[in-house]
Each structure stands twice: as structure tokens, then as C-alpha cells.
Image 1 (cartoon, rainbow, N blue to C red):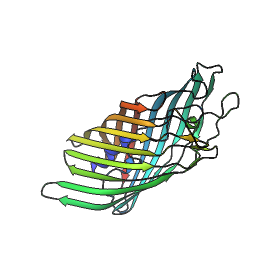
Image 2: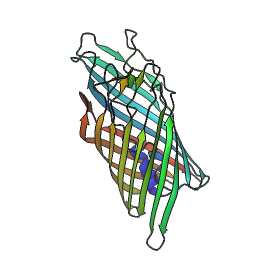
Image 3: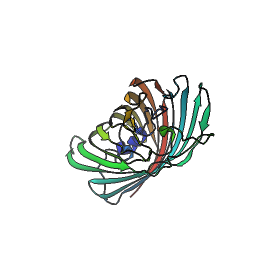
Image 4: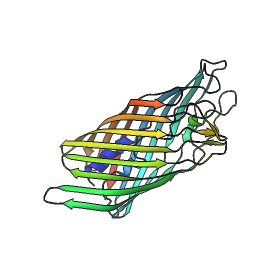
Length: 307
């Protein structure tokens, strides 16, 4: 499996926006490629890749109900991922997040907190590489692919605070909604340099509480330098622009907006087909609606390819 597909596993960074009655940074609408672990490598029939990714992010936002109060969110996610190549042009991807969220409301009349833990929204997707150009003499390869998939309403979305009140939607383990997405990818390979760019759009249905996450445009660009056979360095830029969310049709003030993030990373071949990926997503520009802040997103993963 070409190395660039492995290095792509670092990029699933989670940029953030806020939510319903008390706006919170969005942990469900990430920047970049929704099928990053599928990479930009042409699939090989019968290939199976498994990965285990850990992710840590923080965010804060003002409360819509009480402007004097501030919501804080710390999210820790462990995400098993399986990529299966049933055909030479098709990757199928399943991502199963297990998430812990530490949520608190401070500064207002009634401090609140909750710590939900459990299964998040499972994501099922596919990437079809419909075009490839190879120049063997130059060691050059290019390919184009289409992406499609959806997140499932599998995560629990009725967590409550100590008073028994349902907490903010973005602090829930799941969205309670379907989240289909579609996009396209272009990749250029010529070791020791590799480049890929992709863009996709995501939509969410209305959940059972009348909340709907705003449609979002996601994009990502990656450049990789591989100076040694077992080590590569990656530098990327991820972005997302999201329309403001709605609750029962009413626009939520402190939701939506633009996030751009720089993503430096490194890939190390631990042994054989086992690779370690590590990256940090640093927000470099934000134009978020209302009062929102986002912190760096830290991610690390192990990925193993079975042939």
C-alpha cells in the first residue's frame, strides 16, 4: 500500500462550531476529509486495513440562554477504523467512535456539568477511484476519486446534567440524525513528494429534539516529504465553512462559521506493515458566528495493513 495512504490517517481533525440553546463548539463537523483513513491510494482487491486512532480537543462558547455563562467542552475519542478493498477501485470504510465528553457551564446563575461516555455516531463511507494516470519512467502517479457516505444516529443523544436537564446537543455523544456527505479527491505521487487535495459537503437531518446541524463545506490539502523509507513528514491545511444551526427552525446565533487549521504531522514505520501517525491541528484563522473559541486538536493512530 503506498505510504501516502497511511500518512493520511493523521488528518481527521475536528474543528468546531456551536449549538442549540447553549452554543457549544461542534465536535461532529470536522475539518478536512471525512474518509481520511481511506487515503488517496488506489485500493488493491482483498486488502484490509485496520486502525486505532485517539483524538483530544477542547472548545468554549458563550451560552445563548445566559450570555454571562460560558460552556466548556473537552472531548476524548478512541476510534477503531476498518478499510476494506473489495475491488481494485473501491475502498469501503467503517469508523466506530467511542467518546468521552467533559461538559460544564460556568459563570451563570446555575453552574452545571456532565460527563457522557459511550458510543458515538458510526460512520460508513466509500471512496471510488475512477481515474488514474501512471508514468512508470518518471515514477509518477495521479488519481481522481469520489467520496460518499453517512454518519448514523447510533450515539446516545439524551445525556442530562446533575439537575436532570438535557445538555447541549454538541455535548451529546451522538447527533440523533443522519449525516450524509459527498465529495471528490485528487492525488499526485512522485516520491519523495506527494500531494493530495479534497473537498466535500455534509448535511444533517433534523434530530428528535428539533435540532439541525447546519450544512458544511469541508476541504483539505496535504503535502508529504518522505526523506527516509520509514519516516515521512506531513504539512496540511484543513478547513470548514458551516451554515448556522437551527432549533425548531430558529437560527442559533453562536453556531456556524469558518475555521482554517494548519496540520503538521509525522509518520513512522514501527515494524513491517505497522505505522504510527501523529499530528496536531492548529487553528490559524477563524471567523465563527457569535462567541466561540477552538483549541488545537491532537491525534495519534496506529494502522496495520493485511494483504
